Image 1 (cartoon, rainbow over the protein chains, first blue to last red):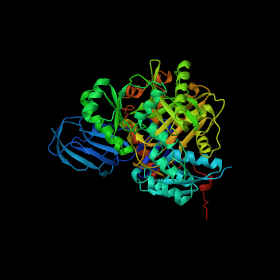
Image 2 (image 1 turned 135 degrees about the horizontal axis):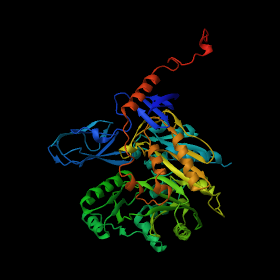
Image 3 (image 1 turned 180 degrees about the vertical axis):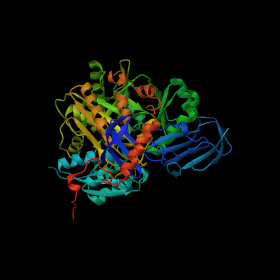
Image 4 (image 1 turned 90 degrees about the horizontal axis):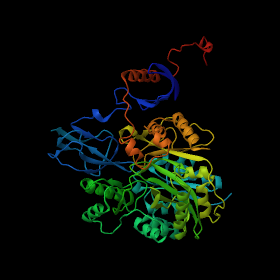
Length: 122
Length: 489
């Protein structure tokens, strides 16, 4: 960890900074931030989520896949139920869509960002 | 100094907490751990270690036979289960005791009685303690569950019968979504506790969650150590707890304390336990009894000046006497630090930990199970640390907590520090008018996302380039006199 200075909203702020596995971590008056070139940085909203696929937002286990290929799915419907850290998370359709392909199986352990379901926006 | 060897069948911060108590009492420790947990502080602190098995809990922390093998192999005579995992499993405790070891916790029959929420409610009704209307029957068909939910009237909460800690709990707001949520609760119950049995009850929508710490000597004697307010919850997972409860009338406090003691005495309770209540409109309802040490036990320890883990160990060794006079002093607050992306609904965040820095000082306590270089994996609960502060008044304790959270550093995984700070500065929290609905009402999708501006991204990119250069290689603004013509040979 190094003490450096960061130009934040027009002011030079003293920050603690450290690079871990290619990601910059910063702590200072602005709180804690992480940053990596080209990768999504802290504070990105879900609105820029792809509309034609569902990917694993975390490493974990597939608990349930609720639709099959060719099924029509309304927007905001749960398609995949995942479990990580003893919690269930529901992955929903970003928009109304038709399932083009299911790329995961119930019980499977998946990695971060792994493609789970391909969709065709209706 | 005492003699004996204690097996710690847990992980993370609570394993560290128990190891420290054992060390202070002069007891030897052996940590029962999973394969990935060799990269944790508890592993480095224990006198001995025993590997239970691979990462997934059912192959390690929930594997009962491996625990028995561990006790036999290491010569430990006591087993402290911590919380979660097997801590409330009556069959497990019985196996331990039948094999001649001591389970640091309540008797197996107490665990079974209180663990089966249905049997627990029967005991509570006998003790004339009020509980929430609901359905606890054995007919678990979906048709019956849906019909009962309608009868109780929405909102209704569905819970895993063997559950606790927020796992397998869902709120049903209407009949349309009921079936899907009940199924989900059944699956979570099956995965976490090996039972898909659920029960339903009326969901109190403006209640506070207030629980009483009890401690029994196992012979029918029991005392309570006051209450904790744990109303700040998300998906029934507690985030901030405090003691004493800030808006509880003294008459209600007395009645609830008496009810908690009556329950502990009725089952000849042995050791530390927590009686949870919901309080709404000046009435209180029994929720459940947690037959173990509680995550938020430190706030009670700070206001009462006791060490609950040492008390558990001393009781197990037959060297404990119940406290006589007990009175609280000042105010304590605990914040749970979760490895999560709060802005994305608390999505777990995993990874290699960098620097962890806790701003130590009077009245500040940091319970953490990780050090720099350790990895947060997706196998277990996302709570990585607890920050607890004490001060003479609630206001001062809250000021201190804000200061401490701002100065704490956790690098490598995303955490909920910012979210905690937003909660602490919220008017309803400051004025203590909050209910269990506080978070879903005020932060329905977590804290608001704050996307970085282009300027901020550019500044971070510049800092990224700078930190990527080797240290000292960047052109320094000042020149050191030592750098002119001198070098270390």
